[in-house]
Amino acid sequence: MNNILEVNSVNKIFPIRKMFKKPLDLKALSDINFTLGSNETLGIVGESGCGKSTLAKVLTKLESPTSGDIELLKIKYPDYNPKDFHSHIQMVFQDPYQSLNPRKKAFDIIADPLRINTDKSEAEIKELVYAMMKRVGLREEFALRYPHHFSGGQRQRLGIARALMLRPKVLILDEPVSALDVSIQAQVLNLLLELQQEFSLSYLFISHDLSVVQHISDRILVMYLGRVVEYGSRDEIFNNPKHPYTQILLDSAPKIGLKSIATKNDVAPGEAPSALYLPKGCAFAPRCPKKTAHCEESIPPLEDKYNRMVACFNA
Image (cartoon, rainbow, N blue to C red; front, side, top):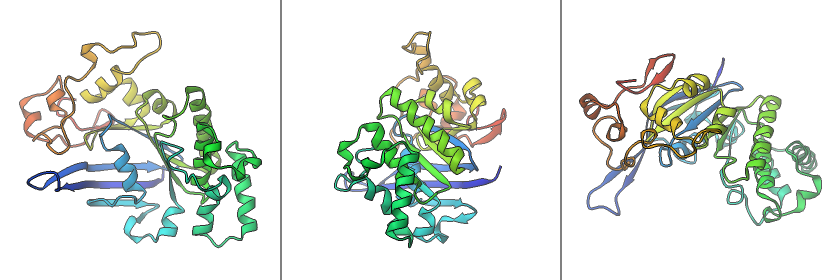
């Protein structure tokens, strides 16, 4: 499989100075490594605050990494000019209302990427916009409506249409269905799967909904407090998780036909430590049932074990 996106040792640190007497660093991302292949879907899961959305912003250049290298189509990020970069990678946001300009009509929202990044005539743009609207399930007469005239599912289709206008190779989907009703979620997910095949897209699918991630992903990357703790194929991760955090995360998810509330043995005790005051060793050690003294002193590296990558001394 050809790698479309390669992320190597990426770190993101936010200096926090104003609220504290002495400068502190918030380590949002620490030593992130992964690849995304052609026509592949990589699911990214983890608790709120683990760095999923920060990673999405770094990958779309909404934030700059503090250190590390990212390559898109074998070209390093600093070597891209903005037009070329945005023609290869786009993002679909979680909230389909806040991510759309309320003062613009649907036609202009979808057309703007072409107007800004290409030299196409208005006649060509009109033809392409209407074709894309039809493809994502929006009727042509909707073109003159404003975002508040649409339902949540229709607004997300509008956001998807906008993201696809430059024919990118990679779509970053940041919780794209979490704000939608369950029945609408299924429609949007099926649309995404169809578009992936039709346009040969690679997806980075960020979500806290494990059932959705399992349904749509080829590989899974599990994050905890800015670090990758487990990374491998969907079946390996879901059927035979090795990292204690991944095990607890999957055990705590509601399952049809079983008790819907996790027992105390299925939930990590306490809360995740602050990213401002990370422990000396493994960040999960304060909550881990398998921790040893070694875990509290050293950060486990991400290593190849059991046909996947795991960052745990006791996997």
